[in-house]
Image 1 (tube, rainbow, N blue to C red):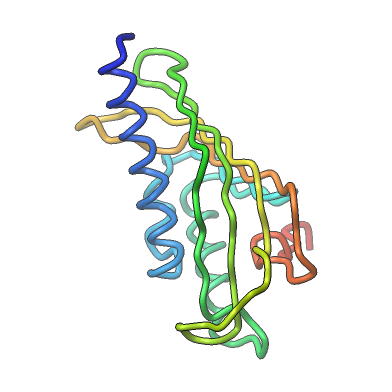
Image 2: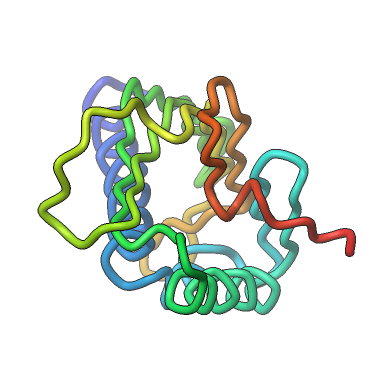
Amino acid sequence: MNSHQDLLVWHALYSLEAKYWHDVDHNCGRGAHEFFEPDGLMVVGHNRFEGREKIREFYQWRERQTVHAVSSVKTMRHLVSNLLVEQSGERRARATGVVSFYGASARPPVTQSKPPMLVADLISECVCGAGDRWHFRSHTLRPVFMSDEAPLSIAVDTHR
């Protein structure tokens, strides 16, 4: 690959990540499953959600918890940084970086001086499909630092 092609792929995957997290933060993840391949995999800590339907079900559950739980997170932002993209084949690439998750039980603007609830390594295996549209084949968050207030994606026990 040449540097121009590398830049185009980096931009495409950064855009994929940014749009995904925007949907999670501003739309309760209602469209998050569409960022994945039909049999895509989302992993957060020990929790695994395989296929668009399971990912959609997780975000529906998460939205219900946010609305109905007494001390749930009402305001959240996911910040992506240090994104490194490496092509792993034709129309395939891997993005790695860091996601910092901030959350509060109040509506914005929130006066907050607490550290992020979670800082996690991000590993995304991506494929470019029809119409040159990129999707996640897998999207993994590996917690590095966690506060006492675990985000719902970590707090949920999918084995129960």
